[in-house]
Length: 248
Ligand code: NAD
Image 1: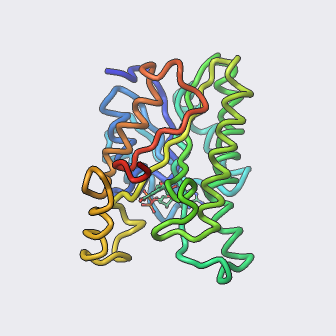
Image 2: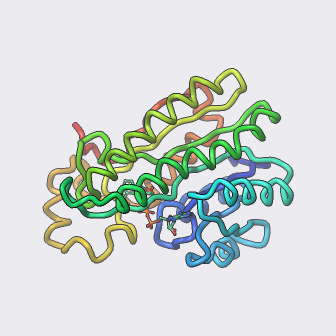
């Protein structure tokens, strides 16, 4: 087992069809104890119970500093350490540039970018005291292509911001033994795209992907387990593309 005795927080991990839950499940299968953090409406307690009694569900809105700090304290209180933070929570909105309102912008940037910063700020001092840890941040192929299939330009901007933030944190905290890396998923079949693309459209998209299919949640989970574990012990500040070759 790659992650025995490690404690992980997965933000946005409660959706059973989402990337967060698939990752939480794979982290647990590798021996980690997992705290699934999500909005109350997503019921993280029920999701954690699906993993087993040793895991924890934590209700928090990651756009709130106070809630990020309180969630981190509750994980520390229960397990005494935090080794892995998967900054996964994010929202998207299909908008064109001229359609983006200030409210839209704030909503998208607040979850992906501010939430990633606030959760990292909560966990970094813990990892510094432990002299080690791994933070994995979720960007997107939308940041690299300058446009998403579903996300608007503000989503691309938020996810590009995550790349910069992760690299800056990697540089700042490397000497503390803390690694910070990013994944850039391509198009993965989760609730974020459910009902938004016709089967015909999905087939058309798959035709342009070298691996000839959309991604699966476990494709992302495997990449996160790699970055969370000592298998990637000399990787920091990297961007791991998990997109079936979409950018070749
Ligand atoms: P999803 O919608 O299934 O899951 C997102 C989760 O985040 C949900 O459980 C939601 O409740 C939670 N969340 C939203 N706002 C929150 C907040 N303020 N505080 C705490 N939790 C909050 O999405 P997914 O497809 O599993 O995507 C996961 C991540 O991967 C997102 O950051 C997304 O942008 C990114 N991503 C997804 C794809 C894809 O094709 N699915 C591609 C590239 C990047």
